[in-house]
Length: 329
Ligand code: DGY
Image (tube, rainbow, N blue to C red; front, side, top):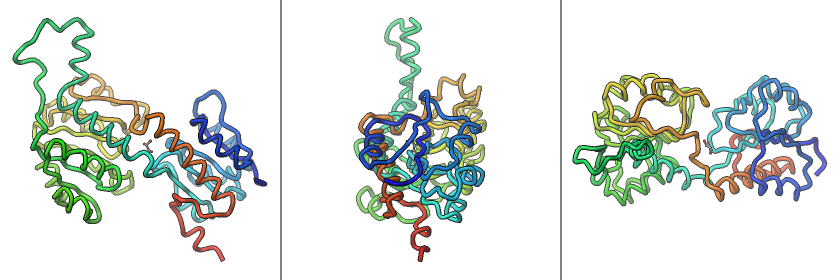
């Protein structure tokens, strides 16, 4: 395909790179299997027709200016796209795409892994056995929370939130959710009820976060919301870290305001609040919600296909700013 070379900001599964090769696209993958620093990124991005970006590559006005006017598409290797200034991209006529659907089930599975691990103190038990501190069965050892018949609060009932809610059937849970719109299938199939955030916080036994990170959802969960939760509540976030105030969460966990948390995302990744690191009632994972081999292959293929379509002048399947195409003469 005759266009300026594409930048892939970090090694992704071969399946995606093969798609780019098959389409005849010239591309460079940033070396060393690490992400470029900001300075490196700004140095290597000029003159690209497309960028296959990861969720921590900040694609803002500065990055778009550095890339230059020939840039036609930023294809994000993630469903979340809070790292991209869509308005700036749209103003410059740059298409932006993401990878929805293909990671829904893997991420929902991980949310449930965190719910179970936090509620039943799985990681504490593992640490105890490895430390040689298991001296036999004890009636009062590592007591956790029951889930059957309890209330699950889903914050953001989109694809992943709905998949997490569907899995709760096995635990016969009552489902509450918050969302800007009614989710008819959740209400019909699971008897779920749409409530406001305060109600969800005070009535849920498990709160699982699945909304996108935007201005409106930044620190959606702070001291006030944790204070409304049950002292037995389990808080899980597999969406984006800044949706909760990490310092406030750490304090709530330390002070017994809530029982436990399961986190796959952090406010300032890869840093983690030092207090959180010390707490046994926090299960901490390194942002691996979509990390299964088949899912990452599908994400790579989807990101590549979106980019290829854009560079061919076609409409990519997962276009986030259709106004770029619709506004064209
Ligand atoms: C996403 O896709 O947004 C996840 O955070 C990484 O899979």
